[in-house]
Length: 528
Image (cartoon, rainbow, N blue to C red; front, side, top):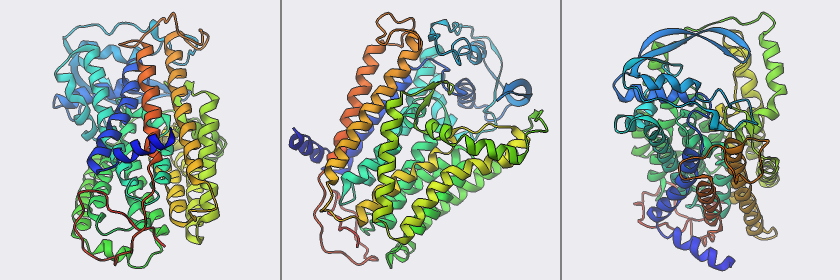
């Protein structure tokens, strides 16, 4: 059985194009299942992103500022939103989730109808200050199909874009000689929360997927240098960076953080020199520079003019202390906290994912050299301290609003860094690496499928309903059985990618040798 799966994995990775297409199809099955099986507006702020995307698709890049009363994290205020002109039924989106969100025992069947009025009225969105690129890419289906079908199509477009980024990360990982370990890193980084957000209309999905691609490409460049593959790796890095920087202002910080830690890992002489001599590097650097300037200009022209009544007791020190105490909550949110952060994944998922991540980090500390150990500890510290610093600096202006998914585009670097350190430094004999990878990816697949079913059960019958939703009060298009089956099959099918046999080492080439990229994967030497 294992040998048959290994042969299947080897066949799937025979060419980069074939592996990309297979990985893309499987990731789209996962993210698309979340798209189809989640009630409309059931993810954080999705109604605002629906309205923003539909408006941008209609040429309304900005909007009229409208002050809307809101209560966020227990703090009342007048929030500056963008007023746009859309069909009247869009104004019903903000209230669709309210009857069941934060009421876990209630299924989504209580949600009101969207309506069908096509009268053009003003709708408001809290996402009006965000860069329009993501919304332009996802909002165009609303021009073709009205009502819920158009909203589901917008979700599927978001899932397609994120799946393309994740598939590119898989292809990059497959270029390593010890590629089963590299694949494990990608699968561990693609947490259930990553796939969930990829299937929603929310820029967080694309931001996280782009973060995985950026980290994978950067680590491949510095830890597994191959001049024949450098141009394509720079292209993937550039594409991931463009997406990351153009989605949110924080994207520039996450990109800079990934570059910093990857440079810290660089120990092999000549690697940076070889990269700096490539014309492709300077081309992508120029594009990223233009994207950065554009993103900063957009952010400067669209400040947040909200007026929030922050209590005097919420000082920077108090916010930092509270955030540090919430570290475990933020970690769980990065792994899987669905709905409006009111539907945690089953305990099985947290146990399995943390066991895999902890094992990988520990092995990287055991086998890594000094700078690599420093980098791993630095990543662990950053995952804890970045939210503390962010909340302390902003609490007196916007309150306690941090969520774990905000850090996920950066935090995905930890498992990727850990497996690539092990793949580079650890001896191939003396430790059963293949068995570790096999058990790890099987556990991740099981935990992933359990998270999907647990969340879907919450929406269909509520947490107080039966364990098997035989009498569902709410059902997604196609039924819950269909999407549970699709998700489970895809979750276990993608595990086959981690069974790829390692490549045989060949004689190393000079680091600055200019060699055209091969049509098929070349056998890549293991770095010293």
